[in-house]
Length: 174
Image (cartoon, rainbow, N blue to C red; front, side):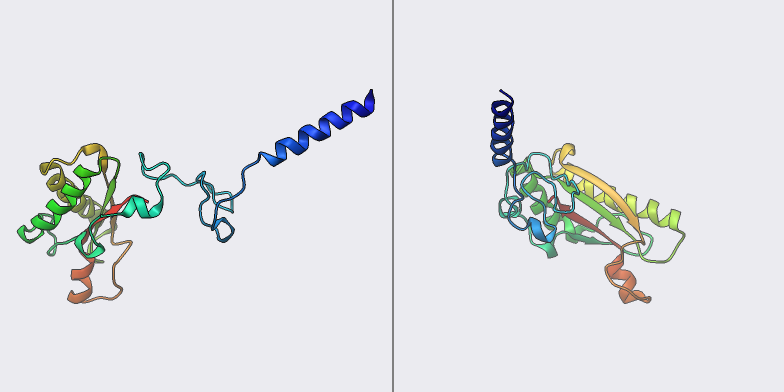
């Protein structure tokens, strides 16, 4: 009787181990597996509604990288007219792809206090958000964040560097 019990438990263990999940392709190099867990055990979250989409599907047809940045003048946060067509193209893409989301990142140059730059970056991100909303994008598809001066596009001081760092970037979810 005891041997049959042990054999049953052993068979059950073999069956259960055969049903366990294995990491997806690329998991050995730290990439996320199909369940959102990477090889190092970190759990990632994706864009809501993007479950089951491959990276290629998620990014298919979205505007090119160069078409997602709005630059601002010193101490300004109003969106210039020259960006309206680019923002309308992003809005059209988001309206056609209701399962896609964006985060609008507000950035500043290095001048000013940390608190001031965080507030200015937030105003820049919100200004871009407001334009997208005016074109009919759902507010559920847009989040904003301000990094202030913390994530410069280019290092250095001087007007050339500062001009490239005063920006809002539309980042599509991964």
